[in-house]
Image (cartoon, rainbow, N blue to C red; front, side, top):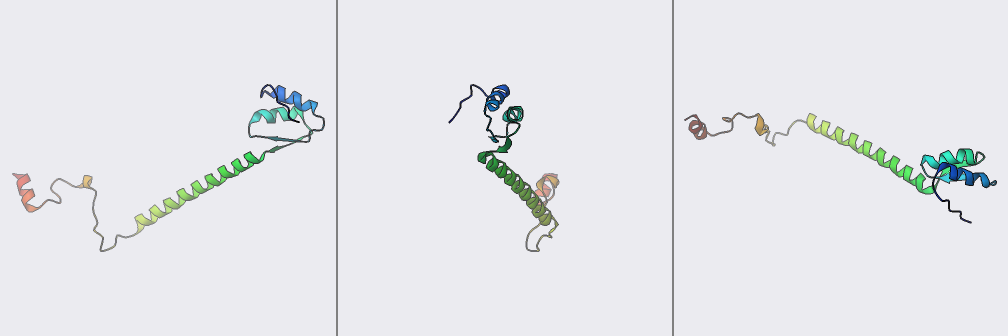
Length: 115
């Protein structure tokens, strides 16, 4: 048997639950509407999350954990790379913005710029 309620209001749901004398479990979503309705409408019933929302909660928790773990891992990799000395075979360069116009120019270019 399926009953379709006219709306999702707390009082409508609570009134329907009060009519169900043998109601022992209320499976609901994470919204507060049905929690607010189940407390006065079926105080004898145990409230629990449905399977969909249990899996949704689990998925969100795992996603949050992996995001934090990945962020911490990337931070450690960057810190390790910054602490690592530059290999002798690899040329060290300074950013272009830190150079003066004369740096890195040939003698001919410096002479020409001076004129």
